[in-house]
Image (cartoon, rainbow, N blue to C red):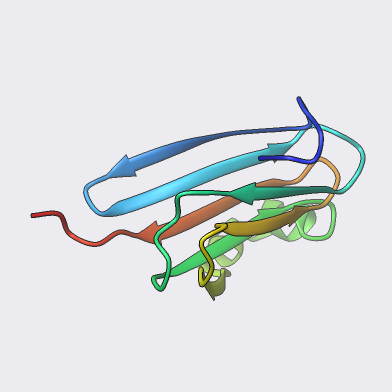
Length: 99
């Protein structure tokens, strides 16, 4: 759920117990987005690509891919993500094993 329609696009990839959400801010303004239906109490990690780290991502991609921010969803309303202009954000969460 985003503050502005058509401002943020995203999709979810899931394989086994790993879920990755990819988001893109399509505007030149900061956007706030809420991701619902995340597993509360389970840690997740977030990585953003924007104007503040694009050069580092291009010159040292291996190092860039190693840097994540860790967090845990604690509320029933999901997680809130603030996205810089034209940012791309990856969110990963390990899901409980089913069965």
